[in-house]
Amino acid sequence: MATLQLINYHPFQVNIQSNKVHWAKSNHQIIKGLPQIIWQDNTTWSEANLWALEQATSFRSSIKTVRSNMSHLLAYAKWLESESMDWWHFPDRESERCLNRFRGALIQARNSGELAPSTTSQRMAAVIRFYKWAKKTGLISTEWPMWKDKLVGIKLTNQFGLEHTLKVASTNLAIPNRTVAGPIQLEGGLLPVAVKAMRDILSFADKNASTELALMLRIGFFTGLRIGSITDLKVSTLQNAITVSEIGIKTISVGPSARPPVETKFDASGSVPIPNELLEALLDYASSIRRLKRQALSPEADQDLLFLTRFGNNYKGDSSSAINVEMSRLRKLGLKSGVKAFRGFYFHRTRATYATELMRVALDAMSVSEAIEFVKESCLHKDESTTMKYVKFIETSKTMKEASDAFTEAFMGLSRNITND
Picture 1 (tube, rainbow, N blue to C red):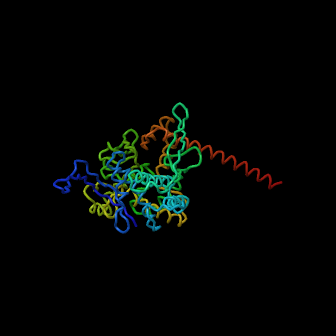
Picture 2 (picture 1 turned 135 degrees about the vertical axis):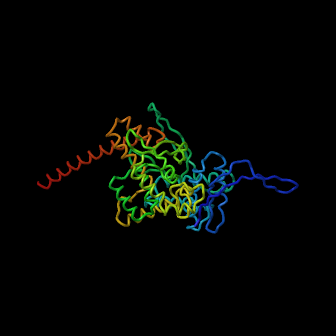
């Protein structure tokens, strides 16, 4: 199948002298870890790789975003190979076109639980962005029937409660991310899991997952860090943990301003609380023979990373595809073994679970405003509105439970009366 490889791109400039071509190193910065797609027959997907280079050199996207886009395109490349189809296959019949068939495959994977709804939407969007770029640059014919453009109205509400509609260009191939029915949507549109379900997941992972994935799940559940931050944690990050003397908890520093820096979404910097038991377990793993063997195979730049693959590679370099594959296997094995907690479970739900439970504890211990500020800082939320969703979710869940209990009691009472009559 197609693979994604990371290269260090050294810019060169061409000079023509005496009717001869001379290549000279450019003063532009070297791009480290530029993703490139290789087909199964070891040829390169030149058009896709040029798109990655253009994104990385235009300074409109970070290298992390470029890798994310290319990981989605890699999934598309693998699907094309499995279907023995070219990426320019656009016959007159709409149902036979490569993009339409890929859209159907994504929806089927989403409905069967293989892909998260958010991933499904992002994957289709990334593929469409590539085709739009290919059309714009003339790498693919503009005459081929690929999709139908349309305008979508998005309602926005400002801080004064006034609404206005923003028109956004879209296509008929876009897959809406309709994750949670109802007014309360947490980060990524995913719901938290119950505490018992969390225990079942961790217990099953301890026995059936790799040591690395089992620890990553614990970090997600007990710190709320995203997978991108978890895979960029350094051993020295843990060694530099600080004890907050006033309350006795320990915190680790993450973000671009941390030393060493740890990747975070929106480049947010801050201190994240971490249970002492978890911190000690991670430090024990850092000095274990298992990790030291991996460290010995890794390049010098990666040797301080807490998590490395068995080949000594970093997890963050492949946009966490290795983790996604193992997570998918664990989920399927868990469901096959009768662990219901794995139904619809994705790694990002660990963060939703952490923030929800942290907010429950905070609301019991302090005022609402203080609880919101505490959770906002602990989860490194960019906006307070994101944190507020957890307050609303907890309040709504409590109200729905009370209503459900009242309905059940009323229904059972009615049922008993009917039986007695």
